[in-house]
Length: 147
Image 1 (cartoon, rainbow, N blue to C red):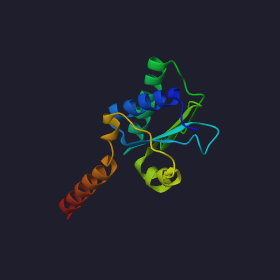
Image 2: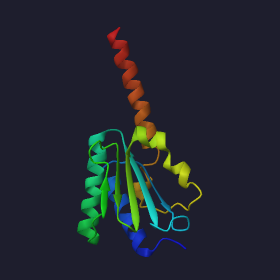
Image 3: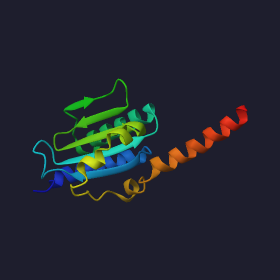
């Protein structure tokens, strides 16, 4: 079994929306062979809570306007560290970068086929690592100025 064309359309639109809001490390998996509850997972991250919420809002708005779908469930809004959008056919996970590293969803789904995403979404790969490196350099510079 593979993800349906409709699921792939939802994933592609959601991935593009996440990339447009500067999400980091956008990736999607076809989980249809191992799960009966959904066809695909989209995972994205951001370095702060406000950006996590912004990415989720953009995905939700784009899927509603372009494809006429709304999530049946939205969880994690209060803390905005890991927000889940359940569209039945797909599930979107947008995580704070720290949660992404800790929970390592990619490790859980690594045996599932990766879904090809738009070029903008693919270009987000490695952004979390780049951001962490820049942040560490800035923190080191700030610490040096304090001494």
